[in-house]
Amino acid sequence: MAGKVVRLRPRRHDAIAEALQLALELPLGLQQSSLDDLAEALGRYEPASTWTYTMISREQQRLVVKLINAGPKPAITSRVWLVVLSHIQLETGEIMAGRARIAEDAETTPQEASRALSRLADMGALSRLRPGRYAINPHVGWAGSLAKREAAAKDASSLRVMEGGRGTPT
Image (cartoon, rainbow, N blue to C red; front, side):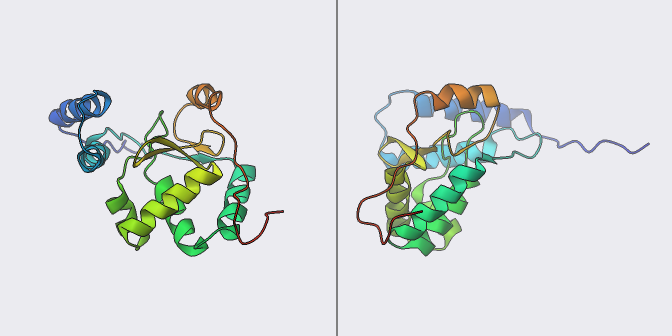
């Protein structure tokens, strides 16, 4: 009989993750760069007992690709989109990486990452939570339970064709 592989995790990581989550939720008036740093730290300390899977709607993903290709700078926007999918917080859909981390992972500049995030929000693939903070549109993708995705999707808008793109998706 094969043994079970268990990931050991220091107890203090749970306390750190709870404290970071609380700091992000409180209206402390922190600067955006501080909020980004806290969100990235939470991503490092957040419990991950198993692999986290991101569910993507096949139909919506095809539409996202068409909208990205029809818009400006499709290569950068595609790279940012793929990176964003790896930073989705379980059960909330929030992107738990700041623009500097996204830019590093997508091999672009923070300014280009910000512009790509804005394009993704304008097309509806992402929702803008507040300046510099985004979540995946639950109609497009989700990490976590389907019941929470359905609840989040009730208030989310669907994807939309952007004005001024290079062409109209078919």
